Length: 74
Image 1: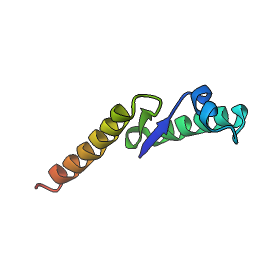
Image 2 (image 1 turned 180 degrees about the vertical axis):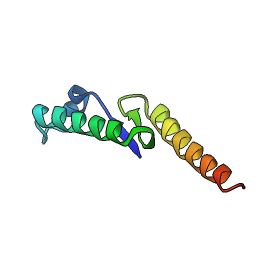
Image 3 (image 1 turned 180 degrees about the horizontal axis):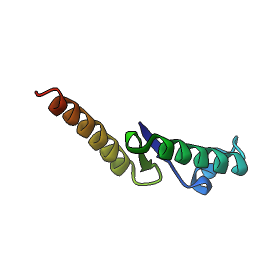
Image 4 (image 1 turned 90 degrees about the vertical axis):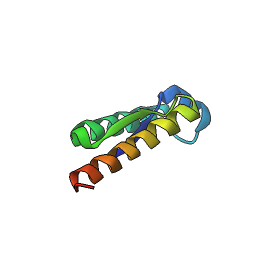
């Protein structure tokens, strides 16, 4: 599971329809979800440069696919 999180202040600047309190609540909830999933979840800072966020997500997916293939003996 890839969990994208960001700074609530930055998100609020773009998404005014959600209150700051709600953004903080949601961000905390996503981080909590990731912690509860343990190694099945990866948190990526969505506030980073777009290319960096995409690369991090692609790396996670590629790594998971390679691990799955190795597990199957391929």
